[in-house]
Length: 170
Image (cartoon, rainbow, N blue to C red; front, side, top):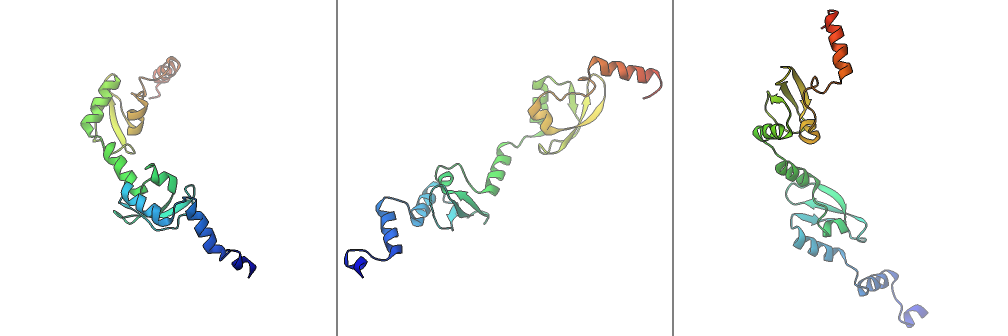
């Protein structure tokens, strides 16, 4: 009773009043901000602080995930599914673009099949040795040094191959 007489009150209500009076954001504030920043993200969890994960739902595909509020507000986080789709659109290359990159890198190889994505293997043919081989498209596109395996052999490897060839091993 003395707590009530001297201006005190409910512990939970008092905490909420202090929380709001210090300018802290509420779940409704975060929902309003997110609606302005990215209207495709719906906040479905409770806000506990900027550095705590909050549950979100993508309005485009319905994906539910958790992300830090600070990352959502500074636009460094978005729906994981939509982010993958966006990266695929940005990094989509045609077979002609891949062939152009191979020429730009100075590799003496010819592309024999169609480029699909950077996880697929490409069938290539060396224009010097007339040797066909498979190589990861990721290796060609990002390492720039994955020409023909025969062209990249050391002198010792070449000598061993010649010795084995002379002995009848092919």
